[in-house]
Image 1: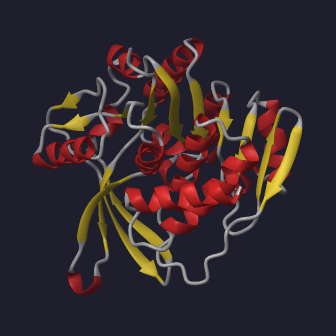
Image 2: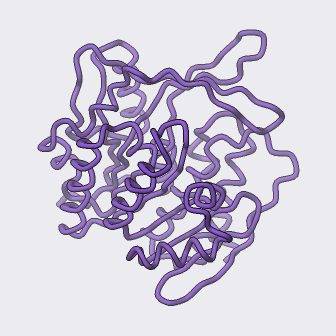
Image 3: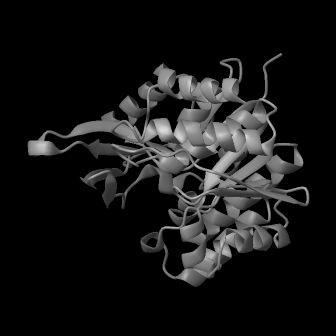
Length: 313
């Protein structure tokens, strides 16, 4: 019998990084894919992992799907959309801090919820489904509603739903639209993984504890509020705790740090770790990721950081 799988829903883009002297490296990345990459590295290979999206019919889309397959990641029933292609972004660095330039108007992923039957099929038989506010932002309002309903049905079938609001103002027509979409997402969410500065900007929360209280009122049972190098606040089951982040003296590239934290946390929870232990392992993994260029750290590096933290606990 096939073991229940994990899935992430969203947009994986072509990533241009390391553009010194015009010598750019091309990779594949995107917030939800970065998280699934970490999940794939840190979960048993008997657990299927799929990236649920939509893909183009161009050579870059074919290369992207081949890269997924080589990494042990499938695409479930994700459709292929004629004439579409992957979005593209370039990373520029100021020290270890990064900024992004995007080209995504005709991204195939914008069509990921256009076929409700294919989407529903992709989310069947999952122990965990992960998505983000960026997933919501790239969709038109009717498609957002289709996605939320598909997640609701997956939850009814006992999938655990994890969500990172990951607020990016330039992707939204207004903050009101973003709040409405996030609130609808939270209504189907079991595990929320927000970043405090994003929540402060969108909702005006005074501190991470206010964020956890607001999400608890929304019905979220498990909330982990990331806050950069500051302690993470977690709440659930009527309890609240803080866990210090790992300090990295000389970070190389902070791209993907929060995404890898999310993947490691979810992998640890799937393995049976308590929330505080899962946060500790996630901090160690995120600390390893910011010591390499690009959003995707090698699997062996992720595993070593994850296992070392387990040994220390």
